[in-house]
Amino acid sequence: MDKNFPISGFSSLAIHGGHVQDPNYAHLTPIYAASTYVFDTAEQGMRRFSGQEEGYIYSRWGNPTMTEAEDKIAAMETFGLDFEVKGILHASGMAAISTLFLANLKQGDKVLSHFSLYGGTQEILNRLLPETGVQSTIVDLRDLNKAEEALQQDPAIKMLYLETPANPTIQCVDIEELTKLAKKYGKIVACDNTFATPYLQQPFKFGVDFVVHSTTKFLNGHGTIIGGILLGRNIEFMKTHATKIHRLLGGNSNSFDAFLLVNGMKTLEVRMERHCNNAMAVAHFLQSHDAVAKVNYNGLPEHPDHLVALKQMRHPGAMMSIELKDGLVAGVKMMNKLKLCTRTVSLGTCDTLLCHPASMTHAGVPKEQREKYGITDGLIRMSIGMENVQDILADLDQALR
Ligand SMILES: *Cc1c(COP(=O)(O)O)cnc(C)c1O
Image (cartoon, rainbow, N blue to C red):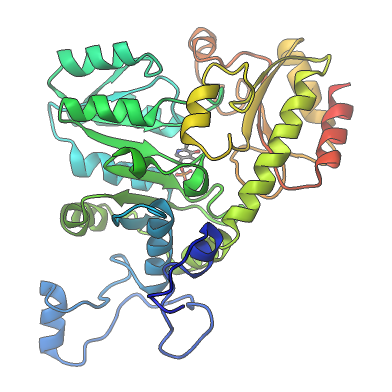
């Protein structure tokens, strides 16, 4: 693609964005399988190390396959916006989140966040960061007054950390309003955009400083990798301090995963359109099903965060959860009867995935605490896939009977 071509559509960008012509004219950027990069001269080596000359040095620091993935995601997260961001590809979503926290927080700082977060993030906040002297304050961020109260009263809060939509009740928080509040008190704002992807939601549009993704999910889209990315609006900070922390922690990605990610992302728009259309049909179907007590899907007007989702997302996404009338027993029975859909954790693959948080991802969380977060015994979480929707409905229907 000519760099000056005025791309007007998301898919065009997802397909061409970040691509650089390979020096050997390979159509796709190859899987660069080399640990190190050679210098023509000792002087060139010095220039590369000092940053006077751009060029690859060592694959923990990056290579052409990883750069393409970073630049493509950065382009998608700022599509239609008038500024750029820089991305650093990581080994996993957790590695990206670790770099985010360790590059921004020091002893005595606090993180303000919501109670509904990815389990790993929750554990970093509850167990790991406190050992480095970083505490977290958890409030219901859907209540803007409570959020402001915390920001106003506690000067130790350095970062507001958002995840929206969030596991497993698909709660959404208002990125724009919360970012405004955080900025009023001079805080850093970061947002986990994994469930939405940049096609559905662009947190940078609302003024956040950092976006993180588990690229393992919808971005890759095929369940073939583990990966993550940290993107930042302050390019200088990303190129210096964040890059330093990333390199020292060693949570780098690799060329094979980067290659699968780049190619998976080319179909992001078409995949998300199909995922979301199917999800809406499944939500309506389950809502009127006799065995189902409740459907948590932010595309339904009954969902408490429906309006927030409408405001900041192109479509409500493909994640939902349901509560069965007969609790745990019904949940286990339904999971065992599935014939097409897949019993597994994770999300964002071509096939429809179901898991039972109470007996799987959250089995270690005490029941009382679980239920406070909406994870009841009969809750089933679903990542709606791209199968023909009548087949998804038929499988769910026979499994619920
Ligand atoms: C999966 C996930 C993560 C962690 O990503 P990994 O790639 O598994 O390390 C973080 N946040 C959200 C919302 C996720 O779904």
